[in-house]
Image (cartoon, rainbow, N blue to C red):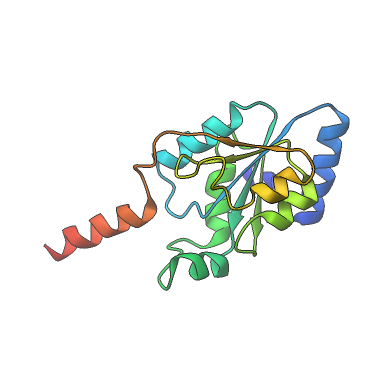
Length: 161
């Protein structure tokens, strides 16, 4: 079942069109989702609670490397997508190659772009793309005290001790 949730750009555009025709709200959440942790789950749950269909955009392996550096991601994009797609709150998952989701935002025009609490509405990099068509940005999830980088750092330090 989770495979059917993982789609390409064309399929996502079509689903967004059909959801809109049915009167559904579309919420977009995005991130690397490398080593899924409780912060990710709370972020996605908060995004889903905004109502409507939850689209989760996952950075491709190359874009994660460009954003996080060598050695990342720990898990390949297809596996990260499959894990995220298995979550009940998630309606559809797409892997995207760009460094941010502006292009995807312009393609599907989500009603709401959900970002984690490491952002404020004014610091969301893609807020300009959301504003272009009258969408809104919402900050969701718990305080940002969980991160894959911190988990990896903690594990590496523990191994060296």
